[in-house]
Amino acid sequence: MNHTLIRAEYDMNGIVVYANMNFLEILGYENNSDIEGQHFSKFIDNKDLPRYEAMWTELIHGGKHHKVDMRHLTKEGKDVWVMSTYACLRDENGDPVKISFIGIDITERRKQDLAYESQINALNNALLKAELSSDGEFVSKNKLFESLFEYDEEQYKSLTIFDFLAAENKDSFIIDWREILEGRPYKSRQKLVTGSGEYKWFQVNYSSTFNLYGELDKVILLATDITEQKRIEEDAHKKAEELKKQEKELRHNIEEMKSIQEKMTANQEKLTLSEKQLKEQVAIVEQEKYKTAQILEGCVEGIISFREDGTVEMYNKAAEDILGFPRSEIIDKNITDFIGLSIVETTNDVEIIYNGPEKIKLNNAKNEIMVKNASGEEVSVLITLNEVITGEEYNFTAFVQNIEVELF
Image 1 (tube, rainbow, N blue to C red):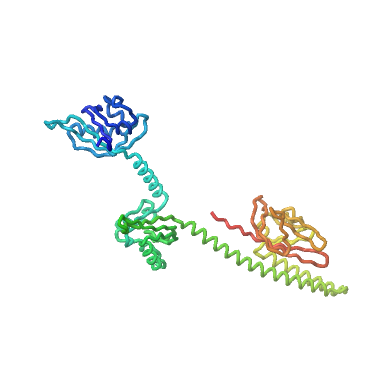
Image 2: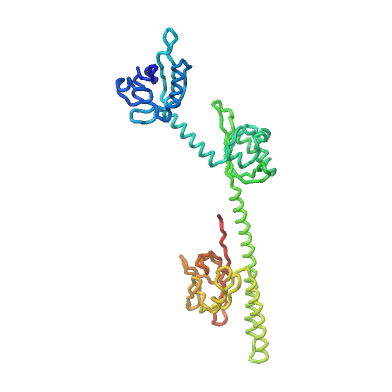
């Protein structure tokens, strides 16, 4: 026993009268002379003394033996955990004469237990957890689970996990449940109903545990409430669909604009030097311009028209909403003053260049660029730039669409 166990004996006053080598080595002493005559309190942390003294008082009065995991202090003040048995030894008359202490060093196991307890506590504080039987009945659940689902303890006795599922998901999950019971982990999103009848979305993880004989012990459910995340995703999807719809309308407006511009060009070619015909054609052109202006003004997309020298001629309400600059500050000003563009004249063309991290030619193309609004904030926009060439004169129309979707 001296080779395998920690062993010591105390007199009735708590003074060490004997200790084996295991006791000495584990507590960091070299000889019996280092500890003989010492009181037991030398080896016990002050925080644990009240509990130890209560046990000691019971022992010296002939009480039954005690089995307890007790923390001891080494010579250097370090913690050693010992699975301890304390027993009262009696003389031939049955009177208590000394206290016997036998123990096993469980320090490493105790550290592992504390680490596991910390992990479990952290898990219980972060995730919803429930333990289920093979029939889906609730064996246990943590406070987060109980708080969120709002059922009382009596209700849980008659509920299974299948009662929490949305009706449209029950049949498919029953099939998944069979595979979970066979040991296949299941990870997915589930819509579950609370005690108040409210449906919430969860990221769930089901896994089975088995005993030493390979028999199912229980199914552990870990879950995270992702209801708000799901709502944000659905909102983002709706906004994406709205953007697609606006893009379709934009393409339609571009085609209509091209048709109007073609009509205007054809009308201009038909003009004669006749003053009467000229006035008639001027009237037609003015009507077409007015119609064009009305169409542009009513578009949900921002529209900016400018000449080849950059002078802005058209700036509709939607553009004003996107960029934040009032119309009075933009009309007849140069577009390069408020959008990071350069106008480059080449031998055969006039190029509109976006001065971003990478220079992009915007002519007759659709691109995503960053612009600064009136507040100095950078805004991501989709810009479609069309050019119209009349004789040697270039005119440009930019269709601007705000594509930022705020996810939080």
